[in-house]
Length: 608
Image (cartoon, rainbow, N blue to C red):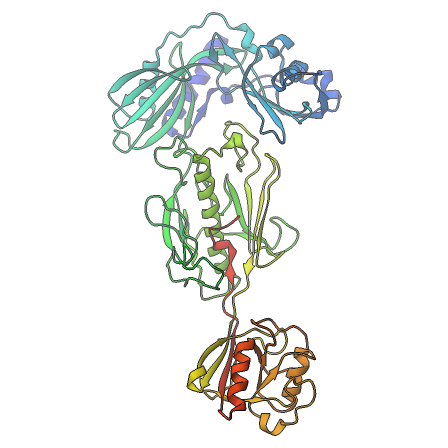
């Protein structure tokens, strides 16, 4: 009678799964009594746990570090720890010692992680795995997952149904029909098949059901748009005794999202360096000459779910965002503006939100300051999120995967520690003109901080006459007085007058000649501010300081009483101006300083 009820429960669930295509797990619909072994004395030794109430088994254990025996290899130390905790899983120490070591993750830094599974006669138990986490001294820190205590109670395998029959069942679940060409055995115990517009493979497994292990076939079916059912990618587990559906999972657990970003509209969609497109890449001169490419490239709307190539096995299974996502937080990265303390996402910070379902189409205006408004900031965040995810996928394809310590919230059982998606902090409050990256060991999230960069100001002493020195002359700014100006106001230029005394360190004796004009004063003897204040007192409308050494510099100092602008020119330009004035040739000039628009590191693909 019990078997009939169990079969009815399973079949009812199968029927629902076939119509909903929303995933199904036979184990999840069968109640399992809590195991009394969870009251083991081990739990009174400081072990902290999380348990599956339905299975009656721990899914996570954390304890004070337990030291393994001396002179053990990491794999043997992990197995010893597993045996010590075996009673909590309803296993004997012998069962624990017989578990298969499927992976030992060791990057020579950080935690050691041993991943154990179980096999019976070479056939793996589906899904059941247990990870032992150790520190570098091989002391156990935590255990996660569980193993099947029923592994020692299985008789001879009873695989009455074939791999081919199970693949046919998988196609039927998808509403597809196809020619099947047998490609023979493949690595990993799989049997492979070519389909019309797709491929399939199957392997023997045991499926964990209450109190027993069911012989079964694990099946993967991948179909493209040419198939009779359209594009799909699903995994199934079918009973090898009667063909019941035990498990159904959609491998395409994602939606495409559209991002308005500076990126190549071609198939790869590689991010551009920024709003300049590829202008200035490579740099035209290769020297730090102040070159800045114009920001004249329009962003492109790019629709994708990830940056993996279509031939990658990850292309259908590793989305940047889950279906229905509304903000720039996904499995690889969490992108937000970090505007206020404390560090990290907190009250006052925000992520970019969708402009419509499945779309991040905020518009970043390069003529506005990066922090001009919320729309501007969200436009920069969607670019940051795109760039970080693109490079995550690009590096992944080159080998920087989960086992190598990359940043992912969920590692999908491929090794390494999860829970460490990248914190991408745009327009961070803690600095300017820089960026930084903190990279803790695997399992803790890295932090990227992107800052706003001060605009390169336009600093010009424009000579309008005489003709032989006419033109724009580079200049250095002053930290005092007006920070933005165009002098004279209402006229094309103003006469330049050499101050008396030349260094301007005392009251100007040619005040009458200086009034309403621009004073030329030599550097040296006293502060820049005192020179400009003397000229202002004499009625000058601006000051040009002639350097006393080659090159130009910033003029330091403070004086809140100074209201006229000032700029510093090079020694060579200062000498040329003095020479003309001393020879009786009038010199007329115009002083210009504009602050420009700051640059946002958040939209630059040269992110750390």
